[in-house]
Length: 243
Image 1 (cartoon, rainbow, N blue to C red):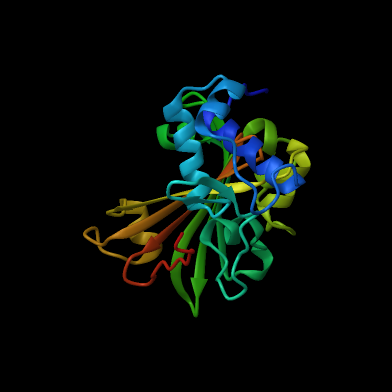
Image 2 (image 1 turned 90 degrees about the vertical axis):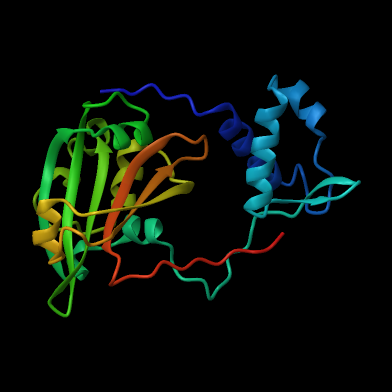
């Protein structure tokens, strides 16, 4: 099964500018082409270019100097003391080294949200791998990996046994592509009846759900990893530069 996916225009521009910065074509300290130059070169409208430049600025690739323009900073350096982010940890997690149990592994219909993240039609077949994670005998999260059938088919991802490696390694091997970045979405909601039983929470409890969409350098999504966290047992923390 093959999925056709064209990343949004702003994502294509982001990927190309990141490539040029990484390759040295746009070295640190050099001025970035103007909005009009980028619009002409890539055939994009100004709002699309502005959106892409805003993302690059927020991520630390470029910096804006009032009245002078935009300048290259280079690939953002991750602080060594910064904790591993939720999505990255789920992608690289070794199930055999985590306390808990596998709840399910197999083909299901993609819910609307997951289908949107993967760029497929709602109710399309996907492989769902779902686990309950425990700490000191207490359930602390439900983690899931949602993958297109074409990616999971013929791999251990659809089998009911602990993975020997992280999901990322299986996906990159099956897809023949390297995962380049993650886009995270965080929502808050009440638990389902099943989640109440698995996590030992009341129906009025607040759950945090983190969806991490792992994409290649072109912006094409290959896998969605999801973690459901009881709000009273977790705190999300992030650190980023002020530009």
